[in-house]
Image (tube, rainbow, N blue to C red; front, side, top):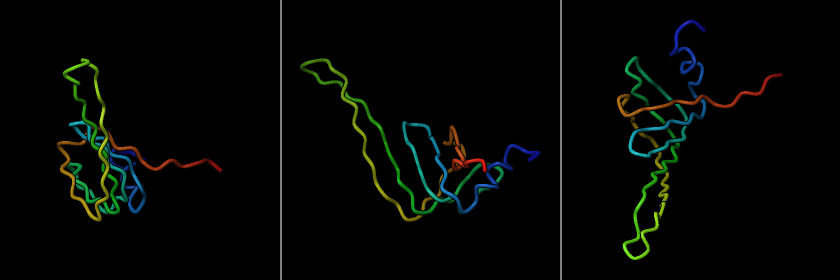
Length: 90
C-alpha cells in the first residue's frame, strides 16, 4: 500500500461503512469509486439520525430512520469517513 486510496481499492466488492455529513451512515458493498471519492454502493443500509426537542419537557429525542437501497451513488464531497471491512489476521 502506497497511496491512501489503496486501502479503498482493496475494499472493492466488500462491505464498507461510510459516514456522511448530516448524521447519515451507509453500509454497503463497494462497487466503484474515483479520485474524488464518489462511490457506487450496492445492497445499502442507510441510517439517518435526527434530534428533536420535546416542547413540553425540553428533553432531546433521538430518532433513527433506516432504509434499504439496492444501488446508491454517493458524492465524494459529503463523505467524512470510510471504513474498510474488518479483516482478522491469520
